[in-house]
Amino acid sequence: MRRFEYKYLVPIKQLASIRKRLMPFLVMDEWAKRTGNNEYIVRSIYLDTKNLDFYHEKESGIKKRDKLRIRAYNSGLKAGHAFLEIKRKTGQMIKKYRTQIDLPDLFPLLYTGDVDMYVSANGQTPLAQENAKRFLYQIRKKSLGTALTLHYEREAYFYRYNPDLRITFDKKLRFSYDSALSSLWQPEAEFHVLGKHFILEIKTGNGFPGWLNQILGYYDLELQSVSKYAMCVEKGLNHRFGLYCANANSSLSCLRFTEKGFN
Image 1: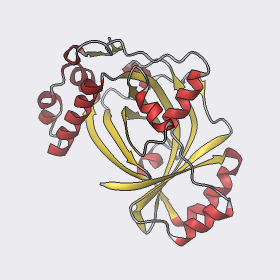
Image 2 (image 1 turned 90 degrees about the vertical axis):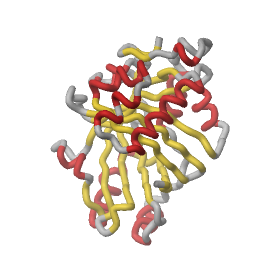
Image 3 (image 1 turned 135 degrees about the vertical axis):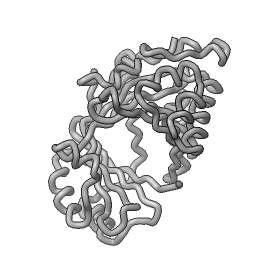
């Protein structure tokens, strides 16, 4: 399903005020409600080429581009799930190809590429199986390696009269150079980004209702091209960015994945 995504960089000091103005129109996402503190942790490992092609495509303003990531949420219980995601963006329009995978099957799937055993056999839909194949194909085609691990806290809401409209507040963005799968569950990432701001994201397939335009106008919020991954890369480039893709010069069939990352 194609949707449109809009992002705004907002001073953290305005968070409580904006939340108060929005809440009469919104209901909280059930996953956020279940945590007990009205937010959940989003944990992602981003993949990129040795030359950071995905990052440079964004910085160059290329309208149609992909991001690949492995995503999980909250505490990373052994019985939980992770997701293989390709996020395809064309201007403001986004489309996601996503496959849910049981955590115990994540390592062997990436190592072997055996979709039939680790996706199909677990009762996933044909669409999920196809998305997993897309993900693995992109890894091999572009010789992708793990770039960095990114964490943030998310408040998530839906418009109470139309759940197609989703609004999130993404806070405390941070990242680590450790790109092993186990780093998804580390308690704290190494570098913090956007300490004085949060990211307001709006996803919709049907445009903005009038009340939302009025609130955005009240705070004089301007639409921005905000990429969490790009911001973390830029922060890392100012230090000692730890991207590695050890197999970038090897044959695609040699690409392997372990719990410690690509090697």
